[in-house]
Image (cartoon, rainbow, N blue to C red; front, side):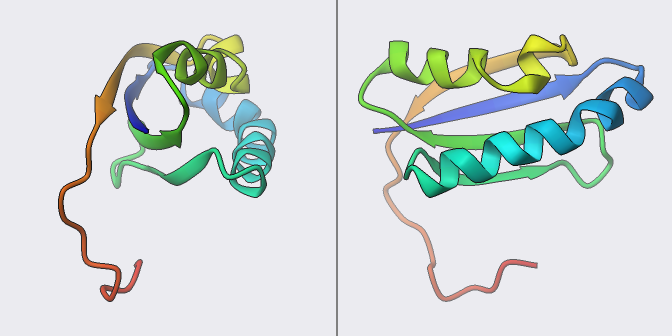
Length: 95
């Protein structure tokens, strides 16, 4: 099942940048384990969207709470939502 995390960062973007290498390493780990469907920052740099693959909401929460961004308290707010993708276009390029 897919779970979306929509998060907004704290105003201290230097703190976010400091944790970015650890966060990206964690995202790469999740990707290699088949637990990350998609991820990326907002164009304005104020937050990000992550789509996890997890068996239930508790597993998705565990994934989120293990993220260095979560541990490092860079999320001013976040929302974790179960999601059922009904349609997507796999042909469109990621840019």
